[in-house]
Amino acid sequence: MNITHSSQRGALACLSLCVLLSSLGTSIANVALPELARAFGVSFQQVQWVVLAYLLAVTSLIVGVGRLGDLIGKRRLLLAGILLFSLASLAAGLASFRGLLAARALQGLGAAAMLALAMAFVADVAPKAQTGRAMGWLGSMSAVGTALGPSLGGALIAAWGWPAIFLFNAPLGAAVFLLARRSLPADAPAERASRFDCAGALLLALTLSAYALAMTLGRGRFGPQNLAWLLAAAVGVSAFLRVEARGAAPLVRIDMLRDPALGGPLIAAALVATVMMGTLVVGPFHLSRALGLDAMGAGLAMSMGPAISMLAGVPAGRLADRFGADRVSLAGLAAMLAGAALLAALPASLGIAGYLAPLAALTVGYALFQAANNTLVMAGQPADRRGLVSGLLNLARNLGLVTGAAALGAVFAAAAGGPIADARPEAVSWATRAVFAVSALLMAAAILALRRGRRARLAPARAA
Image (cartoon, rainbow, N blue to C red; front, top):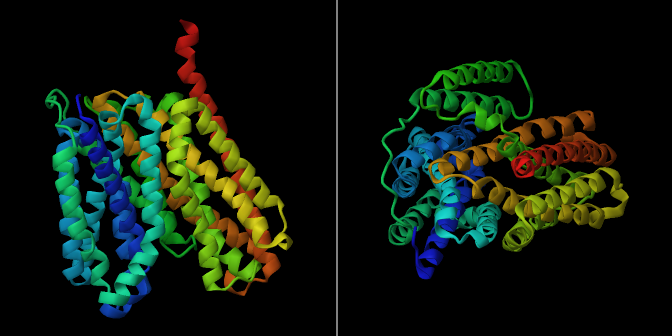
């Protein structure tokens, strides 16, 4: 597929903005929840669905959307996703509360298309020798969106009220839509031999929604409702596997997931996301309760992680291009393991430096892993599977995030021995160390999964 240098830059800018908009869609809404609860007169349990509707739509639909892009054309579906995201943003700023929830779900569907297909498009618009750099740039844009959301949302609400955080996305989305039409290469002729697996896509969406609800409802307390959703997810997994095994054109071929060359990096991606979410869950409590920082100090300390991710993404991608994605992925995991182990071992008496220095190592490792692992997974995929595999990679990350918030949050609460708000600094410090001890074990498991995948990739060459 021929693409000029100027069009290549425009296409990469477009893909980066798609990732930025999708990340903003989550982080910018969190800061508005108190204002939305007051404006609509609803409870916290109700208003949290403003975030959950978006999260559930992205998580449950991203694999199906990625596969659909393979079948009908990535450019066509990406344009539709950008347009849907923009129109839903406009509707969200003008809607009633129920209309807002519906608009947020539609926003999430648009974001799923943007996330899955932006990564799938990299191989079409970036030279093979610069794939890691492009993947690193997308990772940086994701970090920018996550870091920028709270401060941008707060400023927009202060100036124009809560509708501004949604209306802001509409003209920006329109600009990205025009840029995409101009810069993205045309789709190859559609292959009509494959049908879209509607039954598999529906089953997967329902299963993932049930799992996400099991992990997010209850504010950290795992009760009967969570158990019911988790059982529903287990039943859904069983039904999905049966349908895919018997289908003539399955959404996900089961042998793909059994292949360590793909399954290893996907497992590692999920475990890494679990640990990174753990840092976001634990960090504010440790900084304020164990180290005694005020809200401003804790906020500045928490901003270090996204700042490092922003700055390290592109250099990490360049390292992957130069030294190989396999090696850089493992190096990133080793750095994360070292950072988590230090956070588990170092006492709180070392103060803020004793927390931030290992956290910096953890975050640099994360940037290395993300750029290299994304390159590793996507580089060898045929054109007709890139959307699907990109969807699976994003799904692994999202599942890790929701699991990390629930599981590592539960470890933190259990280790503290009672309500966190009333826990003594020593108890909070011990709970933080417990979380990072578990995180170190998870990183060791990620290294094993990635090494197993590497052996599977190298086996054919050795046999030859």
